Amino acid sequence: MTKRITESEAEKQIKKFFGEGVVFFDGSIDTAGSYEAISTGSPALDEAIGIGGVPRGRITQLAGQESSGKTMLSLSCIKNYLDQNPENTALFIDAEYTYDPEWAASQGVDVSRVMVIKTNDAKEIFEGLLGISKVNSVTKKISKSMKGILDYVIEGEDPRFKNLGIIVLDSIAVLNTPLEVAATVGKANMAPIPRFLSTELKKLTPAVAQANVALIGINQVRVDLGKMFGDPMSSPGGKALKHACSLMINMAPMFGADNVIKNDSDERVGHRVRAKIEKNKVGAPFKKAEYFLEYMKGIVNCEVEIFDLAVKYGLIERPTSQSYLIDGEKVRGRDNAIEAMSSNKDLVNSLDEKIRGIYTGSQPFEMETSNDEESLIDNPLLSSIE
Image (cartoon, helix red, strand yellow):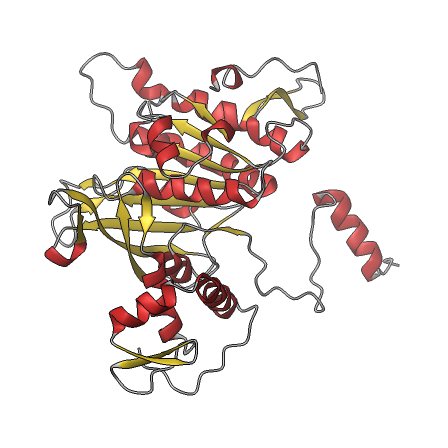
């Protein structure tokens, strides 16, 4: 006679097999707003993503043309994460050897809490993040012969990595894979980066989730010579990278007359960026957002983005098509209304909080009308942290 397994016994067996981390559905759990997010610094982009920023525990790709603000956006994310807690730290893997601490500090980043690793060796980077595993020839069990950075984050014992919540890799396109290192000079190799990432990303994705770290991979866009129809631009990394990413943001600079910021000497000091959400597993995809950035300041004019979002969600009323109610007073003209709102910092912060509450689902949205096992060896990657 077969023994009938009760629900509690089944749960015990499943937990024994998969570990205590297995999650059983509980109908009483409120899953709304369950994603932890790090703000990008742009209210419009945070709203387009749907959760208020880049998600923690996931991989995000920032791809775009040159001078589209990819590195600047990643530094803005680092700044906002460091601002959350004075003990928070960040990791910047500089594969392009172009990290400038003075320029990062000009964006408001506390560079004293940013660990920097300079290497473009793909194998070294992934082993440094994941560690090195080995299989016991007798027991066939897998153990770590070297801990990775994500292992230290998960354990939470090392003070340098206890509050590490964001890692930036700049950039994926310049990674030097083992296939390229071993190749002779001038020898062509077919798709070395996608072939490398197809296996390594399978290990990296669960480790990032367990460490609850926001991993941002900066990428480039290049012309795909083999594509005969459609958009010829593509990003290096192949389909393996696209599958591993939970969020993909494609960025493009805008240099029209109304999209450029100039100083008193008529020199261009900033421009508008259009960001499109190409893939989104934490919100709706294919949304677009526009924001301004200045080269030595970072993302600017956030009050304008908050104003447009407040009008969109009905938090700022419009008695007529040309007037707005700002703090109970009627103001005519969009520019005047933005100026009146920006002068009241408490109102700006209140609107920003309400807007985030609406699109993340933490606040109700009611709008009547709408206008628009052996001793471990040392990790060599840790010794290169500056």
